[in-house]
Image (tube, rainbow, N blue to C red):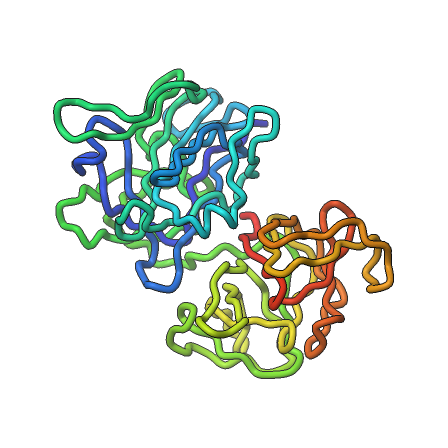
Length: 364
């Protein structure tokens, strides 16, 4: 059965449409999230796709579906492509972007594939455009129409508006843009509920997706403050001994510390609250498996055949390498050397945010 093309960001505001000069004669839309300075909202892959083209001047990445997919405006499945721009170099590197005929970067549906950013000196957003069909290799994506230069996607069946190219996930919150000149009346169709909603209507519902993977964090040695954003206002106190469900490990750190952030679902006085918490193996121990998670190595680390410091070394993971996590195991708060993760390769490496940190979103 064919996948549906499903657009998912936790929160979406349309901050630029076809009236923007840089979008002239294209189907480009600008998407931005909550708009705070700490969190760059991420876009999940709308379908299984591969990277087919990269332009580094504004980190434009062109994606193409691995198989034909279903879209709202057509009755049969077809290949689809899309392009995103303006992600920062840091997130570009974290996602291990590459174009290769023999070994392209693959993203599964629901996996974080792009972050809003400020590349090319813009306010944080993702410029996105869909195209029906496969990407046309060798085409120059820059066009000129006697106005300003603009960029558009070249595919076998042409560009297509976002609301015609992808269903909207039923957990997405659509918000009104701050720019009164933007047309927010685009009509999206929900992938699950099947109802239609226009982007100028604010949807009052839980905007976060409960992860399908069994990935949790156990607060073993201290209480934790749950915040509305990384470094933001306290919204709840999670007592020591609690277990919270991880939605996403964020690739962010507070200046001068080794703490990272995760987005979590916590139960405080039997009420489910979504917020952000700092984490470190010295205080909090992650547990369980997660379907789409990776770890970036920040200090050269040994990869071993068993979760044991005396086990055989398979190789050395060097700074900047990204490894796929299969499972957190034996992570004991208070002892850096007791933290281990199992990799999808079947090997093991010690886990410590001083030496590496996880990032990524569990699939929807």
